[in-house]
View (cartoon, rainbow over the protein chains, first blue to last red):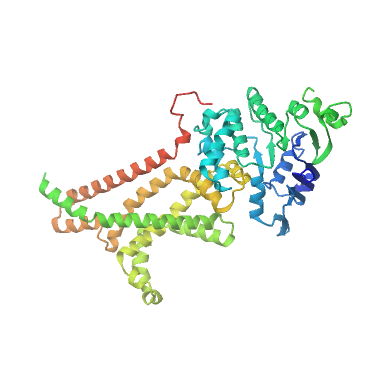
Length: 256
Length: 236
């Protein structure tokens, strides 16, 4: 396991019409890596994350999850996953947390959490329910199991969404600006859960504007600019004297 | 008021109730299945099927149900390949023709109602389902259909009530359902007011039951939209 990357992305490119959003992104995440992806809005960081679990389809490039390459095929002149079955399988191994939570509004929190394990992984319901309660306790909303998403605060909904992703026992967790839609006073409770996950050794890729998280929790920081990785490195180096001028300027906007 | 006449009329009309109910139940359930098929064609991504579905909806929504029923009942017999075909023993039955035209018509309306429900499903919730590895029928069954059904239900319950009332048109193709029997009673007794009032009362009671059932279904599918029961709490 030490040798194979949990997640490996090679030279991903993606255009929307004439606009090239990703211009050759490569990245490798090993077991336990916590990688923060920073960048101004429009730098392509969310698109990059969405390409990894195929919510967007990259035009070219390779994606490997835990040693398995996602097979692509050309269809009508466009790049396309070769097998929906493989896509489903890969997605079930990648936990995704969205900016706007995206919980299923017609299900209780508990139902949201067990939905994937029961219906996608086909595991016995009783065991899933037990695990779901443990996960909800872990993210601090054990008492909300029977509530519906609309009855929870944003911070609680996002923690429920994290529990839902964790219930799939993912190999890598992808976070797409998980705190950007939250009121400032609710950001902390979500970041605490994410920090605890990182400390447990979860492999995480986090698109974020939270500089303190990038600096103190992640072991690698990637700075994206205009669809490319402008600079990357350990947080000490990135936020220290060796920072690139572009990152220094970006970081300056956040009062660092 | 002639209560003897009213009660004997009521008894006669209620004897025709099974025919009305059978027309209603068969046409609504066949129409619902057809509507799902048309909806699938409409949104499935195939250009030709989608065009067919659009044309279907246009024709069956755009022309009067009574004319559709006459076309099925009187029109089909003009084609010798139908008259000599294997389905003729069925298609020459007035009851079958009535069910067929009612089902074809409601399928057009229902397909549009279901499409409206489908379009109301938040794309983000679909995306979340995809992100855990759902696709195809599983995605439809677990996420899309339940949400779409909830949004479509108010409009669909109106359509179902309209169908209950539309069964009365079957009397015009000689099906002896409640309205047809009422007309026959009038032709014997010439007491239009009493007989039609009795018939109207029957339809009112039937639709009251249908609407109550639909409201109950809507209520049970709306738990997530109500305030939590334990304690009244200001909404976030």
